[in-house]
Length: 93
Ligand SMILES: [Zn+2]
Ligand SMILES: [Zn+2]
Image 1 (cartoon, rainbow, N blue to C red):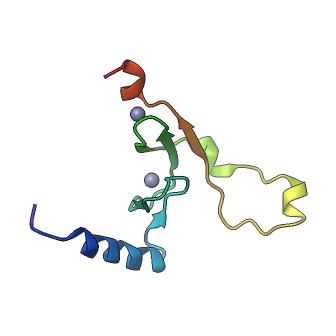
Image 2: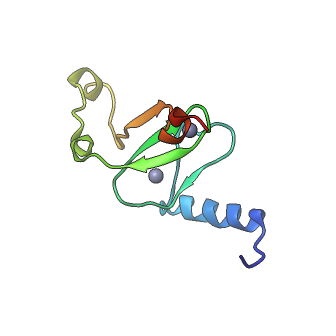
C-alpha cells in the first residue's frame, strides 16, 4: 500500500459523496461509511462484527411505496437495509 493518509481518503470520499458518486451507508454507527458500489444493491449489517455486506436482490428494486406515504411525501430513494448476524459470526469464530 502506498502511504496515503486516512484523512486524504476521507476527504476524497467526502468529495465523491458531494457529487453523488458515493453514498453514505445508513445505520453504520458513528464512523462514516462510504459506499463506492454504484450499482443497485442492498445492505446487510452484522450487529456483532459491524460488517456491512452488499447484496443484491432483484425484487427489492421495485419496492411499492404505500399510498399513505405517497400522499404525504415525495420519495426520492428507497433502500432495503437488513441487520442481523453474518455468516462468519453465526459460525462462531
Ligand atoms: Zn459478523
Ligand atoms: Zn454498498
